[in-house]
Length: 531
Image (cartoon, rainbow, N blue to C red):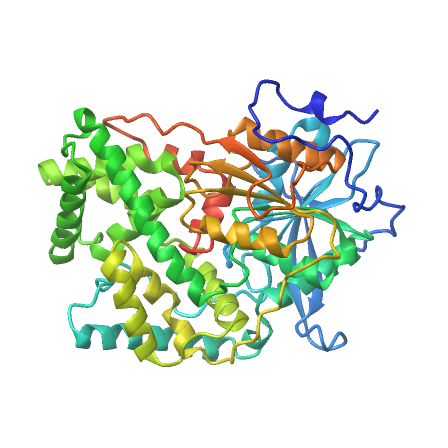
């Protein structure tokens, strides 16, 4: 017997805003009988997610030429076990460039067991990434330490940075000239529909984090009649892809970094860096300057220390680890904890080259970028003057798009009145996908409902301990019920943020990395600023 939402979630979570008493009339009924799947699944479970199965799917390189060359997508599944079947739930962790197969295991394990048992939870590595083939790799050592300081000291250093970005773009064109014209979010959305067809499903459910919210919105625009339920968590501004969105991030990441430094100041008794946030900030930039001249262990310079502290802007669970490393260096000149944090949170590994190539291949293709370096120079220095934490780091991360060997597309208008009600989640202080993006998407997606974590700054709201947000999520996936909306542009439901982390004098880097959910790891896999 199918259980209702009240039996699937823990009681006691405070929700400001009423929830509808019945599924929306616009939602399609439960899935009709489906055609047999054409996929062959084999066990590929891990210690963490033992129920995972894997399959591969051949799709057209160019969806406009369905009988032409084919590429391979890598898929994962946690199969439904309940008699009631609500269809496939496709999941995406963000990026772009992040592998999505493990997220199927995370979502299936994090939802109430009775609910997860009614879905086939489907993960996939988008084209060009992870175990999908061909897999993109352009310059494998692009992020090898020590990189140049992101902030140019003069015009000569800025020219060198632009030349380095151009070299990366050329290498991508040389290595993947056939694949690059067929990368992008629209191509990924068409791949999703090929997955749906291969599953034999008339409609799909969808759950996407960060960049995955934009992918979900594009899929819904292209295939509104194929969407049953859709959850978008930490929402990309659909009108900002991608140059303007990155400029907005620069200011949001700087604000979030300041929030971290203010937390360090509040806990001066533990970290001993002073009780004035401005003074703590001065000491952080003094550390950065010193590392530029003498990288810790010969590996953590100015670029690498920015990389190391960027995860703290995604997830405050890293703050104790980062504060302890900062304190050890600033007070005692001990770079050991800083190097350990870098190795755990930011050092390139075997997935970095592919993840970054996937990121650039999608974002550079998706939408127009300035091709004149003068525009970048003007905009980055203007942003840096107000938001110095990561503006230039972010600029160099995206700068290959100024030189990309494939022309950019015009992004689709994702405004949509034909899709069933979509459920959006957003933290007000999220830096990777600023709050304004969720408000814009809420306006563009007719009938959508917006759940806001007020005061929260972590990237990805659901399935990470906020019982209020999870209550709304579970009810929606269980019954299709959405919060009652008043037709306004603001939130339909408001949830309180989780409390700030507790400080500690010592922190375990490996534990901090393990405890961050896969949605955050997806965002950080290539330091992808979409998330």
